Length: 300
Image (cartoon, rainbow, N blue to C red; front, side, top):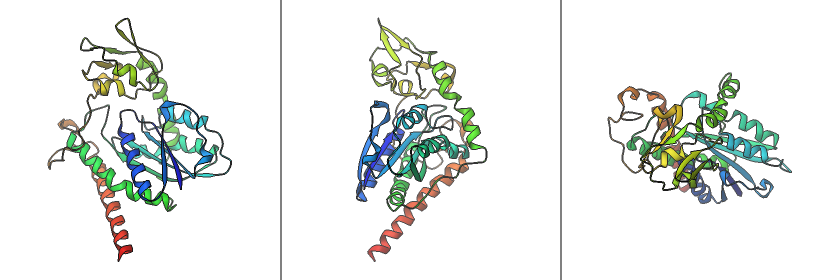
């Protein structure tokens, strides 16, 4: 089985999960290629037995760069199975509807959606999760992905149910894709900037330039947060949303400590989505246990 996974990752969370998919699918005997959507170029999906699309959820939607990529795909000669996996910082039900537009586009291209999954990963905007919580999220990914990949390979259909009125709600929220470009013009750097060039080199849409020693932001911003999140000096301010700025990589190997709140060190967030987080972690543990049981049964 030859599988192509096309992904976009703002600050690395979705790429980490995509790498886990490659590892798990390869272990199941599949040949897997990973394709970074932001690099552009054309692909021929007819060369593959299955297509995967991976993205971070933004404003309860797939990013515009992902939707535009699928729009550019040619219609396949014969129906091809497809799966989706997505990442976000919370387990809110509205995230269930984030793929609705993407599913519609895939259907027009003659892809048949067979599987869809959602994984929690730490925020790169709004507030910062603790490293311990990032570790817990990553552990859950490691528990769930092997089971989900087995379902994909075995062609067991598993699709997240959308919510009532999900499509019109997410359609309205896609204003973020326009608003991001508008707000992006309001990005600026502080005097902490050392002109290392990292933001210029890594912007996925080449929206940042260093002109005569001055950093300038253009009109193509996706609000992926890569520039602000990865700035080594925390020198970038993100316009109207600067109060939600998160800077610096997470350390996923730091163990979670009992008593650490569900979403970060700030007590005002201590109960934020607490129940949904715990339910998600339990679901991932159950997936791992069921997979282990099945494998032990086969060996017995």
